[in-house]
Image (cartoon, rainbow, N blue to C red; front, side, top):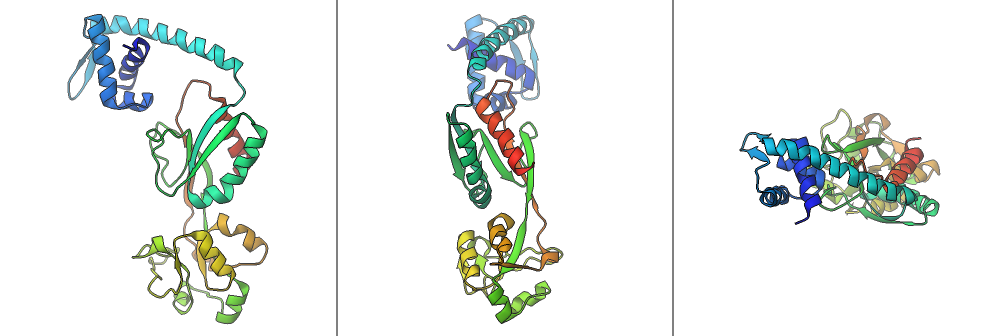
Length: 293
């Protein structure tokens, strides 16, 4: 029996009020937390908690044992912190997940700078548009679009995820510049395959419009659409971070700025922890300084 782990589970259940909440804190399943409690009670030969489907309460033995558990765990934490203090230099593997476009355009170059400043850290950067599970997939931090997730997680706001509508100047000279979303019906609108079936251009103040039926080019990659737009194939609706350099250089020209979709919230999300985690805290500070300022 792992006595310390069982004691941690017992204290977590008391502090958090349920097996599920304790499991989330300990990053294990609620079934495992229940097993830890059973092992501890069997080892001590007493019941520590009275539990039913609606509530739980400490027994007299549990109340006395809880104080001793807290003292032991505090001593363990202090001992670990004293060792960690000798290893304050960020080091080890840092697992980060982010949406594909934002991650490749914004985060990847910053990770390169971060690694140059912290030579003992290795970064595993997972770029995916699916909503990864921070705990189950063991990420140190994730960049999350929309709602950050559990209120118990730390969520640091990043600049909102904005979109732009652009086309190459040569295309606009040839086909004209749209002044209103209704004008798009007469244009070639390059379409992401993920938007097919009604999940199309959601412009401000306008009903969602699926242009895939009229598009002559559909692609499952935003950068592929960007390159087609640069070649004059049509109008593109893509994240501002993907198009920023082309707009600044004049290779793409923004249109319909008054009708752009509302920017979506973006957060850097990670688990709270009292233990020192130099690799994570240094990355958080670095990213926020460079992106938020």
